[in-house]
Image 1: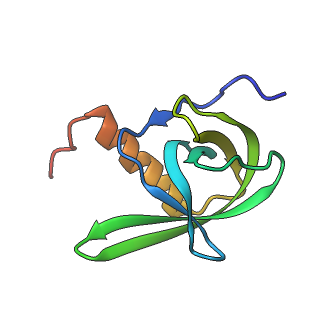
Image 2 (image 1 turned 90 degrees about the vertical axis):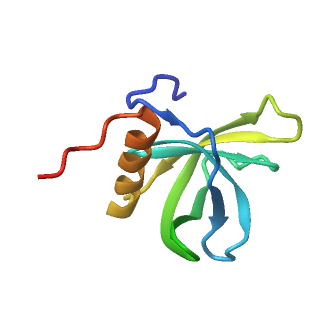
Length: 119
């Protein structure tokens, strides 16, 4: 059973919706992220061991979005502290570079690190 975390995760106080990339229907919210995985918060439990096609829609400006499609395997799922909600941990299968950019942008934003000085 997977119990030890090797990669630091970053909590997200504001949630981004996660969609099924095949149907484009919402399935939950992004709870936290790491380079190789994510936590999904949903109103339905996820099947452990199943592969899911996920889609993130990242706002990038007025009425514009960046779409990031991900293939992920559910490693665990349990009921959240909020009634009728479930937390599920996913391992990403070959995440695209755009996902890595998102993780880094979220890490910088929520770490309150100073922006690099312009040259």
